Length: 88
Image 1 (cartoon, rainbow, N blue to C red):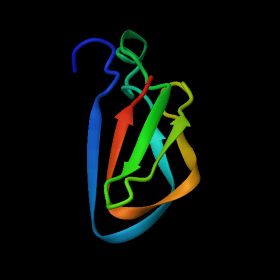
Image 2 (tube, rainbow, N blue to C red):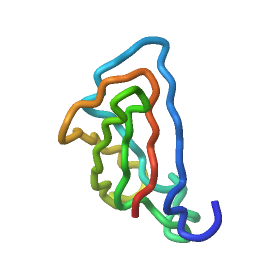
Image 3 (cartoon, one colour):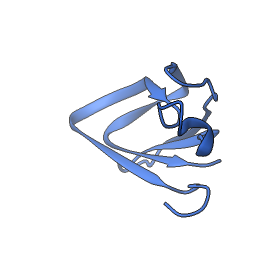
């Protein structure tokens, strides 16, 4: 995406409805040459794209290369289709 990447969206589909409580994320490009040359996500919005369109915003740490972090959602989201959007 152009610019800082804010507003970039990723949609994830599951075969059946799930209850999303947590997930793991690697923030940034996992390569020492490129990690510091590119932006990393600070905040993401996760939306369950079902009838209720529940969403929540979570902060993502800038933990460096080779550090996967566990994100626990402040409220569980239920659905089979989720959208993750960079908010900052």
